[in-house]
Picture (cartoon, rainbow, N blue to C red):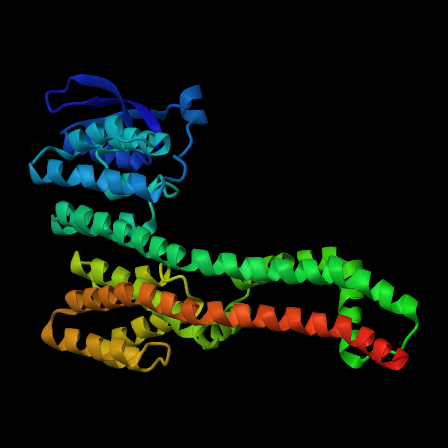
Amino acid sequence: MPEFTYRAVNPQGASIKGIMSAFDEDALENKLKESDLLLVFAKERKGKKEATKKPAGKVKRGHLVEFCTGMIPMLAAGIPLVECIEAMAEEVQSPALRQALSEIKIDIESGNNLSDAMQSHAKAFPDVMINLIRAGEFSGSLVESFTELRDYFIWLSNLRSDVKQATIYPAMVITAALGFIMLLFTFVVPRFAELLTSLNIPLPMPTQVVMDIGMFMDQYWLWVLLTPPVVWLILRYARRYSPKVAFALETIKFKIPVFGELNRMITMSRMTRNLGIMYKVGIPILESIDYCRGLVGSFIVSSALNQIKQDIADGSTIANAFRQHAIFPPMVLRMIAVGESTGNLDETLGHISTHYNEEIPRRIKRVFSIIEPTIILLLVGVVGFVALAIFLPMLTMMSAIG
């Protein structure tokens, strides 16, 4: 935020000089008016320190939890906001967060509110945090906003941790299986192919298929390794810049057997959790839906929420607006209808999120308990087919000799 040197006069006509931070000269004049000072002259400072000042970098989720946890008891005890920010700036472990809080303290002392000061450090503070704090400032419930944020960041960390823990072992099994098959067709099969070719005997079809695959892998193994990550990067960037590609890829993702339903559950958990906490702290439903669009991590759900917002603005009930989109499961639709009719929509959304949070790790474990033996059977089948293809010509040759 720019700093200004200014000259003003007080009601008694005395001249006062000083330095103050403000977004622009008009904002500076308004701040001085609040102190019964009339601005006479102002000039923006362009010192070396200000020119090199940069917004704080990204802050890890764990440090945001630490910040929110520390703010709650201090605010609840009635300690002024500036003192709370100053205390947390001295206690937090993250250098980026410490820098952001130090600059936020200066901005608040200059007359800005907390959410606007945090907006200047968008890399350090996610949108959901800024929006919830802005709602807390508006409703006078900053303690509740920080409590919801702490619980939200903990929930998000637990969700990702559960998903990671549940997928780590199956991912290792799949990687090992693919690595073994790659090794088999890249190094083992080509050696036997050379031997069988030197025997100059007719080869059965299974042997010919395995030899062709082996020769291809031997010649183009680098392309085989590079193609999947290159395709993934292309699709990732295409998804980001092309709505049609994003829609097509997500449609496929949600329709993949077993995994599609799991992906939808994770998306529903994120949507209901974000929407619920925003609505709970007093953000109007239309604004809550709008903010939630950028947090669900799904192009299809984000597009659906945009249309839902328009339908509600046109007079539709929340439940009817959600019913127009097949992406939302029947359980979610019924719970939203009940929450809207009882006036407890925020609690209902929280219950939906809790249900999915408990179900997702169980579903992942159940899915991979089926996939693991399937992978093993597939691996045994591949090895058995390769072994048959290698020994079948030898058995044929031995029979001919006999």
